Length: 322
Ligand code: RIB
Ligand code: CA
Image 1 (cartoon, protein in one colour):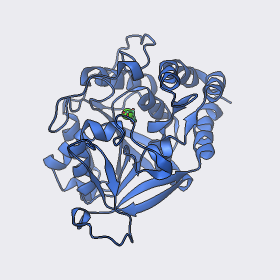
Image 2 (spheres, helix red, strand yellow):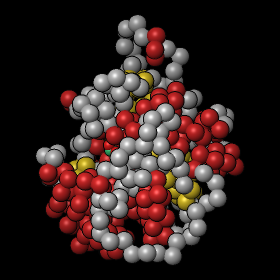
Image 3 (cartoon, rainbow, N blue to C red):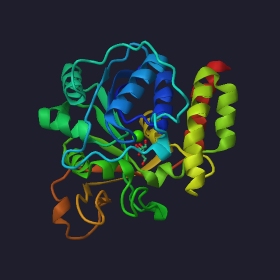
Image 4 (cartoon, protein in one colour):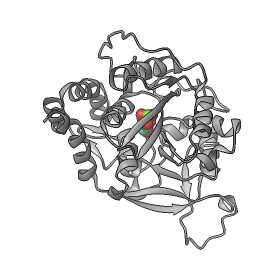
């Protein structure tokens, strides 16, 4: 039974791909589209990967090509040492005869799909927020027609968590801080799944090996593409395993009870040494904060039942193959 009709805005990207596999298997998720964006790799690579993933795991789902660069800056260098030169762990993707790209750019695909299905579409965005900002510029009215927006991004200092590309900034926000500040200013329901909770949600080597052994084709794919990502986490002393960044946003969508959230408007620093820093003014904070006045509240994830989130992924991949 579909409870969530999703446009997945993504920069695949190893953890993006893992989150897509989960969405394709989850019975309550209907993928209405996949929109690519620059970020973990160039737009050409993330778009090719989106087409590959759609063909393999979500056949028939339209794919639209998105932004190649941020609103106001140059596109970042691809993150080959993190996601592989091919964006999916250098596993040697077979060529697939995938369906052609949608003729519309991602932001137009988003705006037209939302207008056609008012109140139904969830935007699940796990890369730079450029496409969403462009869609708002194309048609500000979509903010009232979107069901909700769930993004993976940001870091709010919970438990001392800092950024992951600078001491201040998380990668998705840092890639396009202007877009993020526009997205957090729009009158739609926004939930933000940041490093504060994704750093608590670690898929260990043993966990991933178990998914490989019990998760069928999807489980073997998750194992294969996570090898490169795990080496990055190990070599950068981040974790023994991988942070489930983008999957966490999908898990929040279908199981919000596994997360604790805090309401309040969010601003993004768009210049200087803290460029990309996300700052929430929590409800009830008694300070003078004109830069946050008049902005809608966002729900920021400040706590997570990580074992529950990992169990959900395991059930989705392995119960299918039980
Ligand atoms: O900071 C983690 C985020 O940046 C994830 O979405 C990952 O895929 C990269 O895009
Ligand atoms: Ca991503």
